[in-house]
Length: 352
Length: 286
Image (cartoon, rainbow over all chains, first blue to last red; front, top):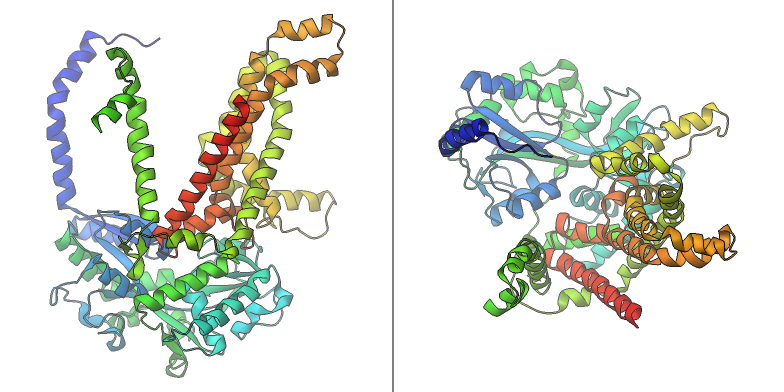
C-alpha cells in the first residue's frame, strides 16, 4: 500500500514547486552557454581530445555516436535537432548542402585552417569550403594472415569461391558500387541502366560467399574468426589489428578509393561560436596528430605530420607514397539522379 | 470532426465514461491514427532528389511493390513467421501447462523468470547470443571440449540463428495468453471428465485443449504478427541471404532514402494484417 502523503513532504513539494521553473531556466541557460553537441563516427577521436578541449575552454562537449552514415543522415533528415557539429563523408556533402542541413563555416573564422595540406583545400566535393576536412583514409581488403594462406592482391579475391562464407562486405552503397565499377571498368559518371545491371549482377554473384554486409560488427567477426576476408576502411582495420595482430590490410592492385570525412556545422546550430572554437581546436597540429595516432587514419593536417607516429607516417597504406597516391581516386560527386541509381542498385543487391 | 471525436470519446454516455475513455482514445488518436494516416499519405507521394519528398500523389509506389523481385522476400517472411509461431506453440504450450497445473508454489517465480529476458533490450540479448553462437563462442567451445565436434560450426548468420533469436524473443508472447486461458479452465470440468471415466489423455484432448483454444489463437496472432515486421533479428543474427520484409522496409528509410516506397510497403503489410484479422473474426463469429 502506498503511504498517504505526509504533511511535511507535501510542504516540501509545495515550497520547491515554484522554484522548478527557475531551476529549469538555469539548466537551459547553462545549456545555451557552454556546450557543443558533436555527432561523430564511433572510434573516431582521441581519448583525451575532448576532455582537453573542455579543460582549456570550459566548454563541455556532448558526444553522440553513429556507426552508419546512412543512418546518421536519416536521423538528421527525420528532424533530429540539437547537433551543432557533425562528421560527414565527402560524397554526402552535396546531398547535405542541397537539403540545407549544414551551414558554411564563415570564411576567416578559423585561424588554423592553413594547417591543412594544399590538396585538401577547395576540393572538388566542396569547392566553397563549407566543411573542414577531419580525417581521410582508403577502402581496401582486410585478411587474417593465419587463415588466408595467399595474401589477397585484388578485389577479385573477394569473389573467390574458396572463401565461401568467410567474406564480409561493407554495408555501404558508395564502397560496394564503386568497387564493382572498378572491376567492370565502368566510369563513376555513368547513367546507363545497362551498366547498373552489370554492377548488380556482379554483386549478386558474390552474395553466396558473403557472410555479412556490415560496416562495424564485422570487425568483431574478424577478431573472433567468424570471417577471414573483409572489405574494410583502413583505420578501422589498423585499430582492430591491435586486438588481433594476425589481421592485415591490403590496397588492391587495381587501386582504390580515398575518402575524406569532414567537419560540418549544422544549420541552425545553437552554439555557433563554441562550435567554431572546437573546429579550430581540432585543426591544431598537436590535437590533429593525437587523433590520427589514436584512430590510425591519415590526417589532412600537414602541420600535424611531424607529430604523427613515425611507424604510421612511414606506412604507405596510411600515408601513401606519391606513386601509390596516383592509384587512389576520390569518389565522383554524384548528382541526385546518379545517387538514386546507385541506391536502387544496392537495394536490389540486398533484396536478391 | 467534432461529432467523430465525441463518438470516439464515448458517445452519449455519462461524463465519467467519457473521462475514463479519454486516455485510451487520445493514445489511439495521437499514437496510432495520426501516424498511420501520415504513413498512408506519404505512401502516395513521390521520391524527389536525394530522397526529398515530393507531394505529387499517385499509385506508383504500390505498382513498384508488386514487382516479382520482392516475392521471395514475402514468402521468406511468411515462412519465418510461421515457423517461429509453430515452434513457440510447441515449446510454449507444455510450458504454460506446467505453469498452470504443475508448478505449484513455484508458479509465480517461474512466470517472472519467463519475463526476465524482457528486462533488457533485445539488442543486448541478441549480442549475448552472438557470444554463445560464435565460432569461438560458448557452444562451439563446449562441443569441441566434449568431443562432439572437431571443427567449429558457423552457427551465426544462418537461418538457425534467426529462428533461435525469433523464438527466444517471441516465446513469452505465446506463453502468456496460453497461461491466461489455461488458468481459466475450471478444474471442476476436468474433474468431471475423470469422474465420467476419461483417462488423462482423453480429458486433455476432449476438455482442457478445446477450452484453451482461445489462448492458442491469441498466442499465435501475438507471435506471428510482430514476426512479420521484425528486422533486428536478421540484422544482427542473420546473414545477407535471409532478408525479410522488415529489412526491406527499414532499408527504404535508412539506406535507399525512399520514404514514400517504404511507406507503401508498410501500408501493404498493415492492410494485409488488418484484413487477415478481420477475416479471422468473421470466421470465428460464423
